[in-house]
Length: 192
Image (tube, rainbow, N blue to C red; front, side):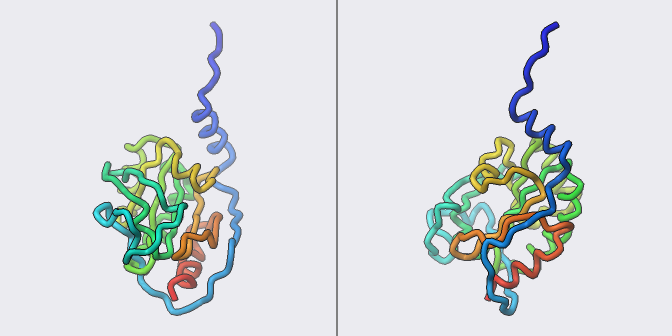
């Protein structure tokens, strides 16, 4: 019997599983001034439109559409004008599961001031739905990125990763925050 080569996606997923759930490293892409925190708003699919929040100019990085784990359309243009946290996770990742509670807390604490969006990948939508249900992270949008399109847009190569954008769409942080610790402080510095 002749062996068949593995599909690139399967091979990538296997390599990620063998290497763990992220390196734990993060980089600050800039520093934000620390001011009093303001609430975070996670846009609903109905908020999606051709312009961002309050008519803000849409940066190129937010010019994409996706689908939520619930099958609803999502237009990232609606994120423009507010700081945005993109949390890249995989359903089988224990580090991602450990980040869920803190990420959900930040989404709730900063509602109306900062967008918090989960971007699930490296598995099927059914597993993504189970993760959202089990971790109680359904209070903010969760994108089902089965094809990895959003992951590629943000050059994310491993799960358990945060990409934080300022209100103008500039990346101010990219990295892993073990158990989500430090996320609230990074977000509060952007809301002033």
